[in-house]
Image 1 (cartoon, rainbow, N blue to C red):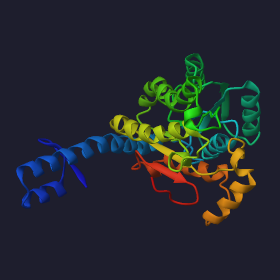
Image 2 (image 1 turned 120 degrees about the horizontal axis):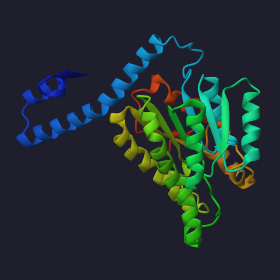
Image 3 (image 1 turned 180 degrees about the horizontal axis):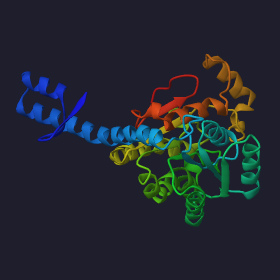
Length: 314
């Protein structure tokens, strides 16, 4: 366990024990650097969630759910996995802002969730457009004044062919939406998350990052990039008390994946390889995201978590 010492900052008792062992000076120096780095990252997370319990108790929040009175943004949230995530976060007490590229989809999703008595609002947002991201940020601040959770689910795949057949335009569109936009949107929302003293970011990748499909060329690449983005952001933001993790869905039964799950050949092969003998449902992903946003996951950071009915090897 890490402990605080005035002279040396955060240092660990295990390190002191190790230094009594017979290590070379170089090895001792490397161990010290490693534990100092762990302490630096952990300190931000510990302080944030220690403060969270105090704030919740002192303000008398009516805890109707584990995420009561927290604020979440979910992109690509009007259908499939994104919609299920928005619903689950709201069911667990959060105020949720949903977004999508088309107004009628936003209206439909908001009406459905509000009809269930959930605290949800929405706005149009093409995450690849700076002006749309700015509008999303403005909507969040107008309604709630801040943000606790960001779930980046929006994605595109305009090409069902191999990588070498992708034009520069296709590459730009896929990377802009699938990879760049989560980082850019986060940078715009980050000051408002920092003001809350804690936060959680969930990026949504794909099993295609582990098992590429030959006809999903650039899409495979974009989803693989999110694994690295998760690890990088988790290191950068941990000292601020903001955790970053990644949901890696398998074949989930949604409109986005119907090109696969409605293919008879694919389905027959799927049943031979997957022991659970069923496709995933959006709700299989939603519960994990809610957990990763909750205080119960306060020591989980920088993880790429697969929800696919099996464990792939990268």
